[in-house]
Length: 344
Image (cartoon, rainbow, N blue to C red):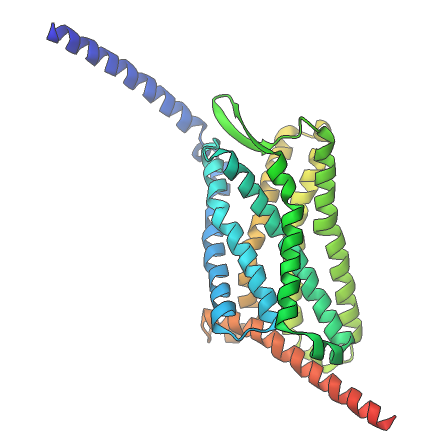
């Protein structure tokens, strides 16, 4: 009797083993690691995750602890915090890309998307704030010298974060998890209100890209015209840092918005091509979170000096130099206006 039961158990175990082997082989065959494009995207995302955590962590440490608190460090610290927060939730997206199965529940599905757009809006709003701050400092140097305080800068940063949180709420409302072919999918569910898809996509493009970029271009046009014959143009490293940050944001986020807008009329485009374009656009948007600290390093000093100083010194010099250059310009402008008023 025991031998019969033992044989039955053995046969059952063999059958289960065969079934599990087939399932595992099917999953392996259909996994991301068998697709060269998917595998490459995973590797790129993992690299960006580590660089983003390391780079933004260093910037937060330097701007928040090593440097004296100024208006400039307030801007860059907030920008680094935004990028760092997004990088911390990126492993969930990487795992989803690998398994093609969302196993983290509805809350994390909503939260990861929510944080992505909080990062997008907060980054562009802070770049707008910095651009306006630069232009005001150039046009009204005395006013800026008297009114630019850390407390006011902190208040502006809080306002930018509040607006970013408010504009990211649609992710909480429309992000959903459903089962499809035995796997869970995390996606935007607009079936209940189809018109929401278009309105949300267009509003994100307008408020998170078009209007801010117009404001930034206007500010920098004013700065370039005002400083065209000024000696500050000869020491334009701070301007280069900010220009690089703005250009990077534009390059990283434009493909994402482009393919999101194309998705509104997906019946007119190849579905696979559109899906791949959205993947590339999302990755480029993610890349913006780790590129900012890199720009602080490579735009902060001359090329020859980069290899002579430490990584931490480069980042600190990139942020501190901007404050010193602006202060020198404000001081020169203030003394010139003082002499002018004396003559009058």
